[in-house]
Length: 286
Image 1 (cartoon, rainbow, N blue to C red):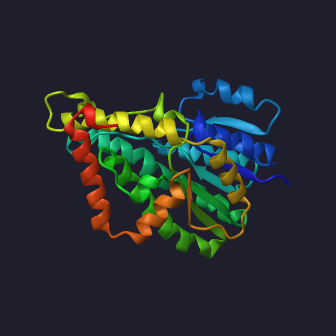
Image 2: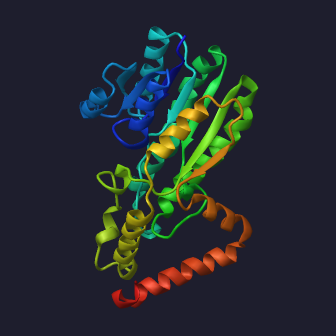
Image 3: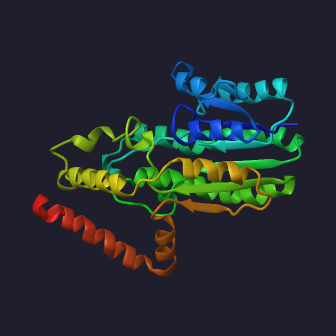
């Protein structure tokens, strides 16, 4: 009997890839789409596979509940959940408005929490399973200009670590995937800056554009193939003893080792030097 999986945020990126790869691996996949009209690529790529696109905005309680109710009606069981739906937000914290910050946390934190909570009764009834949380290396390090996003991922990491302990009581495994830079729409179509980020009269103007350009250069140089993350997620769904945190990406492991070895004062000095160098002018930015 095939196992049943729910994946959120399947329009593109990791969610899209996971839905298709998991179906190839034998899962029956319910693929959540915030706007069902955007699912044509998913439907085309998954033709002939047990992939069932469903409307699912993780910030809406009714849609979360209906997604689980449909899986219960159609399948009678659920064995895995991949909380992939999320959004990024660039900009210095002082520039971020309250509505922008609340929306960010609504998707990245409350959406993942609410989706997991909605799935737990059916996961328990099915004998357990795996919940995969899509975090980020920003869930371990707050980078200037991405601190709001990092705050949401720090929160997700704390919730997931607590759930790891609590849900082990019911044979439900919780795993945090922490990708670095990958070639997904988060750096393209879905790239988002706060409204004030382009305000040329603001105090952060000397740093905003150089930071944006530095991000572009790093992504161009280091961003990996998202299939690496997708394949790891599908493998972890079947792992009986997965680790809590799985850092992925070309710079993920060296970065993790450095953070474990270096005191925070060294990290602070590094970012201070980067910001100082960017502030000096384009001729010194490399």
